[in-house]
Image (cartoon, rainbow, N blue to C red):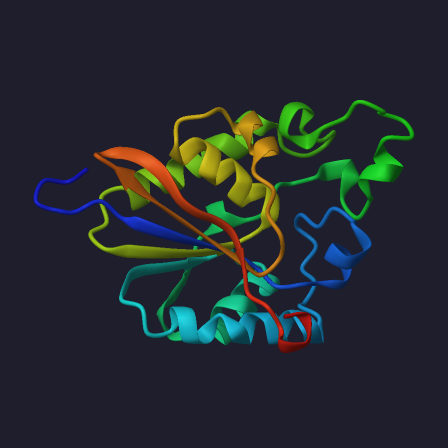
Length: 200
């Protein structure tokens, strides 16, 4: 941490709903848009996020994350960060867990990675680069990204291995807040939903 700067509070936002989050297909690098409901979910983030004083706003290059950031009112401050890209699922791109387990019954992405894609350690290395960038920032940082990537991020933030991401369930269009407890990296809030009126 740079001298004279307070530690960052990091707000993590998983993008809104897509057709593939509904179907359970692994959506790594496939650049698909939000559904109409996903856009409505992202708009509900706007009152929460648009007036906050963020020192840095970063988004995955993929449109589902960028659009969530824009609809949440932070598009004008958004910087694209390639290390926020979702896990590269390789041969498992577009396939559901149920389909994968027909041939690999004990498979778990956080332990096994993906053939032709990334290993947990490779995703962890991307996240570690990002954390090194964020830790010296004075003030709040907002990250707009993806489910598996953000689950590795929270694990690495608190010093756990990438495989610990399996313990942090994360729904679409949810917010997490990371910070510090007496100088120790900590989780302040996790998987906090935004709720559409007819879901209350």
